[in-house]
Length: 205
Image 1: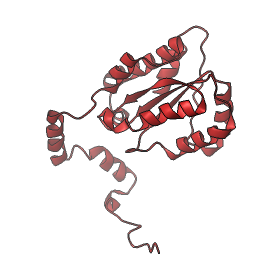
Image 2: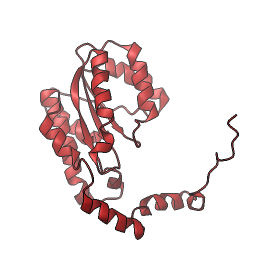
Image 3: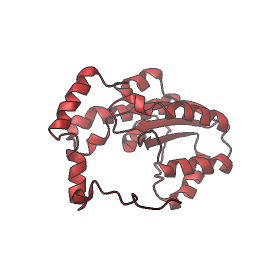
């Protein structure tokens, strides 16, 4: 998705962008250097239940004392496997306050659910999603911020409808809900240990 955002951003004449992944501790120093040089930064991250990834949080904590943020524009993209956007709303006010605390310009937060399945979906099913990501880049390149209309169009459903919940229960009964995770467990030789509790008998005293 980041590649499509970058392509959209660079479609505006004179705009260039870099993608820096934070999944390796050795990359954080380089990321801080690039962050300092950038006029606009987009944090794109997954949400795990109600928490951002630890390496993103550590990077944010390092930025607190590393560089001056005044005038820098910062936007955020939260993606998750959850269908409903409401699951990710908990991070939205945090990012808004974080930008304010840094003295930066808050450029908005976009939330997109139902992303996990894209790993196994054909190109025809991900075309609309990738176009949305490209539009995020285009808007950031032209306006330096995300519009309410774009954010709302990307968010999809806020809560699961009664019909969706009913269908989900049926899918759960026939095993369609867990097939993707079970497939990964089997490929990694861990399927028979899926109910293991390795920490159950640890003495915490």
